[in-house]
Amino acid sequence: MVGSRRYGYVNTATMEMMESMSSNCVQSTFKQEAVAGKGMVTSNHPLASLAGTEMLMSGGNAVDAAISTMFALSVVEPMMTTIFVAGFINIRLADGTVTTIDNYATVPQKAREDMFTAIPGSLENDVEGDLNNTGYLAVATGGTLLGWAEAIERYGNLSLKRVVEPAVRYGRQGFRVSPYLRAMIIQCQDQLAQFPASAEVFLPGGAAPKVGDVIRRSDYSDTLEQIGEYGPDFLYRGPLGETIVEDMARNGGLLTKDDLESYRVYERAPVTGTYRGYDIVAMAPASSGGTHVIQMLNILEGYDLKSMGFGSTETIHVMAEAMKIAFADRFRYMADPERVDVPVDWLTAKGYAAERRAQIDLERAQQYEAAPMPDGEGDCTTHCCAADADGNLVTTTQTLNNAFGSRVTVPGTGMLLNNCMHLMDPTPGRTNSIEPGKRILSSMSPTLVMKDGQPYLAIGTPGGVRIFGSIMQAIINLIDHEMTLQESVEAPRIWDRGPVLEIEQGFPNTAELKASLEALGHTVETPLKVAGGMNGILRHPETGMLHGAACWRADGVPLGYSGGDALVDEESFEAGVPV
Image (cartoon, rainbow, N blue to C red; front, side, top):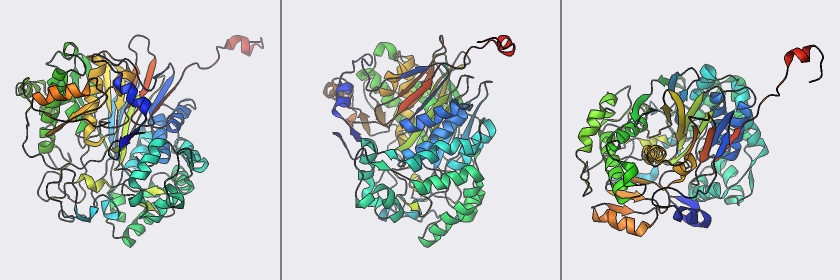
């Protein structure tokens, strides 16, 4: 196995695949795309994709499929999401309506601006005692369950009880431990061991389970079954919430009954832009991701990226500079839109992009902000997409923040709790400093792309602050470099917020590329992975076929179905004529 604690694990075959990519396009992929005519679901676990496909084949639409997939992910990808975390849902309905649901986490009312002691010089919001990362003080008010339930109620065809059924089943029957899950458990085993209810499930016998072992989550299945029966009030105004609050009080946590009862989901208009004739539809703040995806595409639209070539020094240089510009603006302007006036229209304007593009020097790297404010967003997130035969399209990203969140499981519930307080700046007096009730800023970028008014692409990825740069690159791979969707999500990536430029090891001639970029003034590192397991669905503009893809960086699987009902002559059938 090849890998690192920070970037996870991939096998030798994956590395060989990455090294086989050419300088102009991706010649081979580690995984294969799926193609179907009636429906498609992509996610970062095969059982979760199966749950969504089950909904499509049971009369559900893409919204039902996406939310069922997410419930299933909360069981089988436990390090990434649960029902009390944070995320965003981007929906395009068959009638052309586009809307987004913001179910991101909020700061508890008892939180104080100076409640943590920041570690000087940290760019990851680290504090003394790791208190905002592990344990009860790290937990923010999660909105996942309420957001998922409202999506089903407003736009789905099925009941919440039906949508949650596959997740309940998986928890009771158990699921296989993959190499990816085992690696994540090993990475977090010291923290998980601190909390008996977490250790009982994920460290049976005091050690990480082996690949192929089966994990069962019966307590969590019981919790999900009750949610299916009683709805989200079972958590936000009922017995499950009372259990959480009591556990918090016993262990010095901040969450109260008032935090749960006062939590609100926001349905927001998306942020929109264009790129070379395609319409981009993305998340507005409290996600910074959508705004900066569009901002970076606006800047890069002024370059002939196709002629410059995928993976060339020139292409990587201008993309890195565009990323640093976006991060400079993010640090200055982005925060909870209910409390800060975020200038989205200006940041996504073509004119502003032209001004910023003019600052890029093609001969040397620059730093567009000398001292960026801290940003501690975790990269342990999950994503899914769903499309149905009627033209509904959904892309949604949800997160515990870091792997297994706070590592706390509420005893008797099987439910892990988030560590979204790690996203807040622990230093008082800054844009994203801790403030009671404040909506936490995110980089999540579940994104839709339209062509000539018709749905073209749904895409998203985990990866913390690396998310929106990765989504930008996938869109450019498709449009400029004419890759397939599978090639686009698997292609090697870069990331740069300054002062370090990360380029994945999968680029061809990595050593030579690193040297040429350093000659331009970049400080280059070559990690195994940038961001996480991207997945998406592309609707072919000519054939209408759905292409699903999931990349090698996670356990992702696309599942689709074609066919349909039998062709029946109703008149002959009613007349008793054999069919």
